[in-house]
Length: 207
Image 1: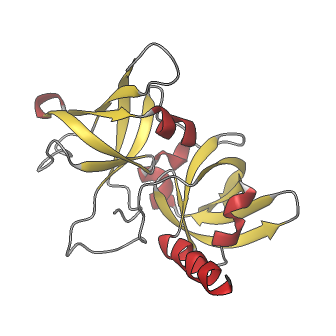
Image 2: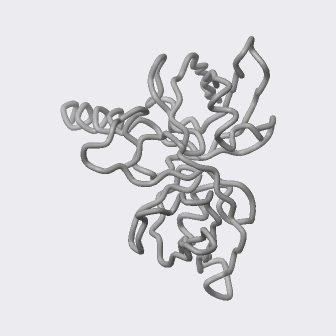
Image 3: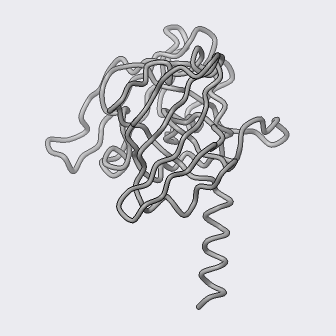
């Protein structure tokens, strides 16, 4: 489990295919901030842009670690199949503070930035999301965008489309990859874990 509180910005520096066609995944080498990998070990879970991955090797001298991403995970996410900056978060430990919300690191869908502009001291972000996620989002509810825990401040439903808005404070923009957002960019989305359980219980009761 994670909290959606990004603790560092890493950079995917190497991408190698694990096979000869699209049915194979890719091996990623990520460079982390200096000392970020302290106390990390092979087998640990680290979220990359909100997607949970397992560490398969660590090079502490060069602040690098490696993960392998399956073809299924590559198809369900965005931004972890090529070199570039990526949000990092280590898995939550029992007894740690839960400053964001419960995040599993399993991306539910990919959205598209429809609006990203200054709003006073903050930034307004509007994301066009898959219709299948609409039932999980509510005003003042939680959403993870590229692994960042955010609070929904508006939802816009229609028969053909769904969008939600959040506000980003300057600290969030400065310390995550969300600072590089632009209209048209795709982002990984994970809905609140509790919302999924509620839907399951209500569906079971109805049936």
